[in-house]
Image (cartoon, rainbow over all chains, first blue to last red):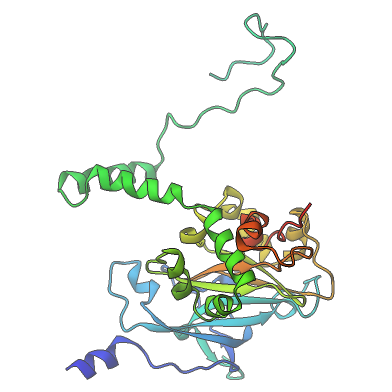
Length: 108
Length: 218
């Protein structure tokens, strides 16, 4: 019983630091914590932060379980903004939940 | 309240004319969310779920937190390598040393180095490490800062007077979920041998958001 509860409490992690990922290009309604500007972009997982209750569910007073693994994903500014004028090495780190990530290279 | 400003100031010292019409107060009308807040608060009190004293106590605790707390953490990290390692590995745990409880969020400390400058923004709302820095400044919540910092961080930094060398990486952190970010600024030159209590006043709120550097000693 405990084991089952624990297994249900969070979704297993699919990614680890160093993995190339692509943010899903999707536009569902609701309380979404994945910024529009980053959807569809490719980045690299830099930190696996553990699992957190899903804010898309919490926003509607639901428990948000099973918890979703959360990652810090690093993007190159030049990849995100075609007109980016700073150092080509400049980066942008965004916290993204696992269900918004796909292994990079698997094109929609 | 908002009288035209070309009337005769017979009750004023004319050495100090006011040139601009005063901005009208907006506290005489309530917006939708203000009305909803009052309604929910009154219901919670009427049902005995929370007390007015608890609300007041929470507001006072929020107001009491400020940048001095963050500055003490940074100054300790500058002078205590073991603490700095713990702070970067697990900020949430490390700040227990200062009696700080991050609540439902986690503290994630990002370190400025000779090769990387970090700056924090919340593009979606106004996520901010309130437990260590207090309430966010108004500009942090503005659409201008939120939309431009992810897109042209160097231009925004320059407006704050912070010019990051072209060959140094600028790393923007968009605080979109459960982490709360604190920038650990670079320790200023000329502070060798200083104690944490001497260093803390060099650490501003803006330096811990990443829009400024730590102050250099005069």
